[in-house]
Length: 296
Ligand code: NAD
Ligand code: MG
Image (cartoon, rainbow, N blue to C red):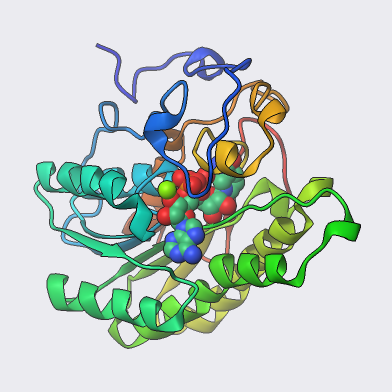
């Protein structure tokens, strides 16, 4: 049987557009997507690359965060799962997969737009796992606004509070616990480098995340803590039908050089690499995972 290590043509490895028209409301549900995304539930094979590590993963119920949580557990890490309260059922599925891999799972439903929720997430993780040494900050929102005439201050406040502030809040709260060898991984986007016209608020947050990653990597280098990011191209997750108008979903991913979107499981390996000691000399970098489209 083919595994994630079996050589094959990546273009045809996963579904290609056109996709059925579909729309959800935020934050969205992986089981309402057609076709259902692959988060590695059946395909991710671990190798103990994160044995004994203690990770926090935000946005862990669905999409990229779900794939990363599954991969981290199969690589030997305990995983604290952060998500919104309305995503409880999806998060419980991920917790079950983490435990099936023989690791501890911590369920943490909360809105990370509040600083205290970020502090509490770190406190509970340290209490349950006895420490924390991987922060995978993946949660995000992506409102689309077609015209500056429709710009609203609340939208920008929401995007920055959800996408940027937790980088500072989680890292500050975790700082006293982070030992040399710890790793922080952020989630930028191709939009942070090549913005679409209707994603100005989102794109500025994603450019900010890549820049924060460069700054914090230098700040934390003397403590032996690495800080890196991943910049995905189009990925088949609920973020898309939850935030993007219906007609654009049918051709989603066709703009990538591969002509298809990535599946969440295809994002997990760079998050594993950056978390692992294998990446000892990599810090301050944001790795593009875009199906062949250059971003830098
Ligand atoms: P997703 O909807 O599955 O995951 C986003 C998660 O963010 C949600 O599941 C939710 O749990 C969390 N979240 C949102 N607001 C929150 C809040 N206020 N408090 C706590 N949690 C909150 O979609 P995804 O595509 O897997 O998104 C993960 C990350 O990847 C996001 O940062 C997104 O910007 C980024 N990204 C996605 C794509 C793509 O095409 N899907 C492309 C580039 C970057
Ligand atoms: Mg979700």
